[in-house]
Length: 446
Image (cartoon, rainbow, N blue to C red):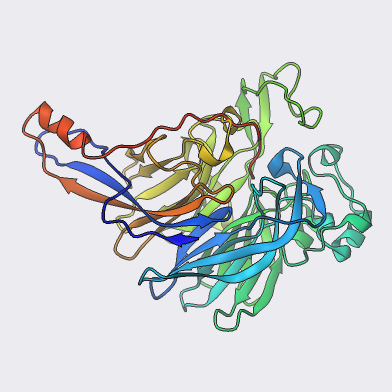
């Protein structure tokens, strides 16, 4: 990982139409760190320090088929970490050597440390993912899984492994209270064990804790594998799962059959409609005190089908906004705008390389107005995490698959209105955004 400090920005481009006396808004992306390993959530500490979850690169240990990889095996190692970017620009890794799962030899699509976040008192908490059948995690859960009934589809998308093939990764799929001085971790909640024994959504027995938001004394965790939002007491006194309802999608478009796909994943005759799993991802506390979360949606990842939810009375999920694609994170800025980060603007299977899908950032104003702050192909390829600093600067993790992860700072500035159409062209010429045409072979994400 290398720190970058650029006097010149990577990208600068005008994103607003000029009308009347309004000034155009220029958006600038500046790279501040690179070389991150399967980068995920990004958060700010009380002193302005940035923390980035790195799920790691897996290793040469035992493997399990994962729904995150269309059944391809992800293998265990000790390569997870959290990257720290201090206000003075220096960087280091903490919790380095944490348990991790990833494809081999590509080292992509990792599962491990997802995010480090803080409560209102400044206490840190570490969320760790998993992406698979909990009974494969370790000997304890494998023994518990013997008497757990599994649906037929389980053996296609996330099958159990033999007892001697368990991953030996007991630290995955958990929420911890962290001590940043000593590196000590205290378990608060085990999502793997809860999913195995309760299966909240009643479908496949899979867990993948993905993102966390804290409200008062409770952590809210989006589980993309279990299709649920968890509310977990930070004192370790317990938690509960809130299933996120599926949605009926008409005329879904599937990819063509391809070698290596599990049987039945791509139907011979596409159905007229499909009941699509939610796959909740990013989650945040809104300025109104409510919890909001986005979804990636399940395979085949139809364009425009992803929704943003709000937890209403009694923590019931309510659709707040819709018409998105592949949401990986969301947050609010200091003006109350909801910022929705899209991993890709197209069905993920249309891309050839999962590292460079055309991600984007959409702003949803309090009055409902939508503005695309960064469009597809303008620098946010395969973005996975977003955070807003106290001075309203936006920070994003991009290229969140593999070893090329980056953190970029997005700044919005007003620029003078051009006196003529030629002036507008001049503003647009101040910067450039490289368009990436991507096609990918792998299919799945969360």
